[in-house]
Length: 304
Image (cartoon, rainbow, N blue to C red; front, top):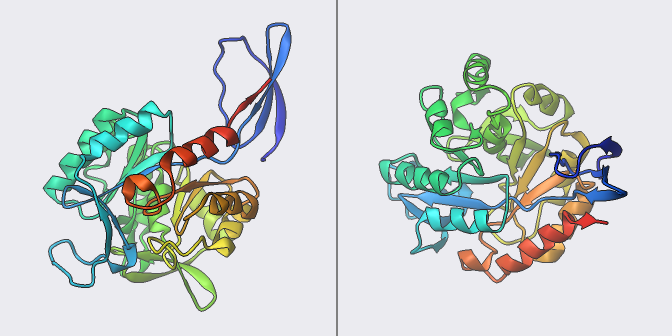
């Protein structure tokens, strides 16, 4: 848990919950609202279809590569998954276009319409289209390779995008979040860009996270060494994020069981949210989606 605080609000008054335990007054009795780690769902779209792909095998969308490993392809449209997440009250989920081709863009927009302001969107986001996705219903835009050039961070692009969209809408680390798709190299977690194929010269540490937090509302970090492989989580990466991220952060990669969710909670000190992809039964895996939702509800329950 982050911290505890007392607040005087009316019974119907709004409150925000950021992985904390907040004590509030509601009429004659005080309520303890326990806010824990969130399950943030995902919708990955490739050529207009909802798929689960091993990210490190993704090549240029113009090519049909024999190296592409697809764990799952759904016959349901992306909007159906968005409606499911909306019905279950899940916030902070993301729609990722694995190639911003017209079919994928159309599917992503349909998902945003189905769950207005409930999903973030990433994949091919740039200065020219970011605001359009926000108008279509995205809560945040997730920026990735656009803010890197030849393996180096392009600060001018980053600043322009943050100024145009607004820090609170630029889930830039969600943007950078995916940009923060990280792969370990030489004992460090480097940001990998261009469909997770090119190592940048930026690696994850407290200083980098502090800097990027100035341009983002939260981070979305993919552990590429385990992402899509159902090998368990990268506990070291989760611990690093829990210790050093100054803003909300969601971890993706390797979750296979409810026990893995608990490990994220422990390793991240209750400060790291989590997404699950290939392991879920709705994506062809063995981990029950409803079980994960139940876990999420238990983490974020009201305690009277």
